[in-house]
Length: 120
Image 1: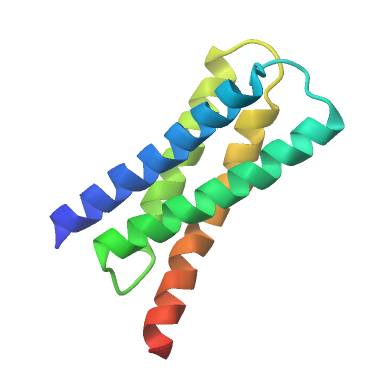
Image 2 (image 1 turned 90 degrees about the vertical axis):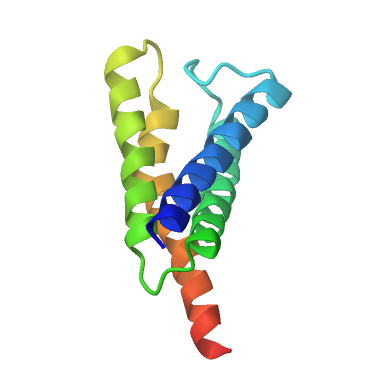
């Protein structure tokens, strides 16, 4: 059971990172450049969907009865973002979004799946 949780966290985080990298590559935007308001909103929406999906997949793989897996995933997302704030230059809007929006939304992804399981 612990292996499933570890794999769930790793795959959930991988989904979050790969989709984030793909977003910035496809839009040809520098994640540390000053964004327009529209692009910052688009980044927030895209990142929220990606983090919800990452939390849902982590919980689906872990098959947990609680949100511990999602709390760990959220801690990793926020932890790496906080580390990046101190190590990168430029605008930090993406890291702040990861800490204050994307990490909590990954927990909601797991909560959504748990609620669906209980209603079945």
